[in-house]
Image 1 (cartoon, rainbow, N blue to C red):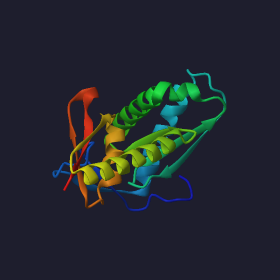
Image 2: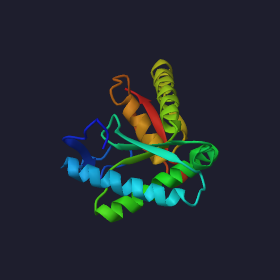
Image 3: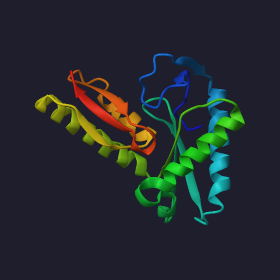
Length: 184
């Protein structure tokens, strides 16, 4: 673990990726559980990275704004881990989350980042969400955003959850699922 402790982590289990589920169970994770999750995820990342031939990497771990475990991989020439539009990184995150969940026996939100790529993407999505909220409010009409991954949709919902002018819902299925910003 890093200097930042994951003491008294409260994460909603079985949450819908869009945060609109009312049937969530709350579980308080101990420091030992979070340490085990982090160790398992880091070991899985290191095993997978052997096949990418990326050389020396550093994996920093820290807690995100929503209590998720963020593992940021840094090193030389890691663009191959990000892939076109972050698709390889999304696949890596899905794989690591699946391996970790099966190994530890429960799900805990894990975000895999490479050299701050997702942090930059998160900022862009928050900007898009705020602009969509402004448009929805000013034009008094719903604004549909482009189709997004579950992680991206979650970021939009989180970015606008405290904006009293609008509400957000997800619509569509599969890869066509998108966030709709609705004026109140």
